[in-house]
Image (cartoon, rainbow, N blue to C red):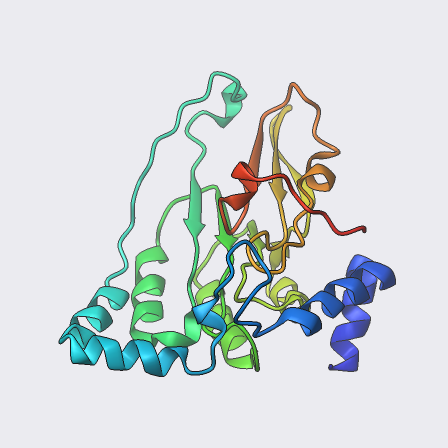
Length: 241
């Protein structure tokens, strides 16, 4: 473990939370059976890429799959909420998820072309920046940095099950405010909404939605960032922090 990363994480999270979070990764990273909400985790198997690649080639779907992976499209969703403060009418959020940046340079190139010149008020990144679920993450950070250079602030993010907490200092140094069971206030004039984000709820199960929401008044409008939907359908298992 890089001592500089550890120091920055302890400053960011506090020594106890940082070491506890790192310990959970050390205990369970690359675990194929058990842990998380499902028993079998193919994505954690070292041979998974080769198995999937071989299966696709045997079925004749490999090149079609490659093309599909590179075909990034923009979906526009208009949402209406009676409780939304009036000054946020028309507020636009650019939502990007599951980039797995080092897996396809063509896909990331297409992504940067799509977001260049796009008009939005806020950008959110909801995890799985890395292709693998364990091992080195430098290539993933380099890929995220290239995408980040084409995005307009403010930018907020959360971690996914492919991501290590060790990536957080570098992501925040890029200008991506990571929400680790935390909440930020977004203001427009004299009105505001709340943006909460939770840590990975799928594999490491280190989400704490109560902590993230603790500063949000019940009557005020809020948005939750989560890499996975499981947190909506199961009771949370928070770590102390």
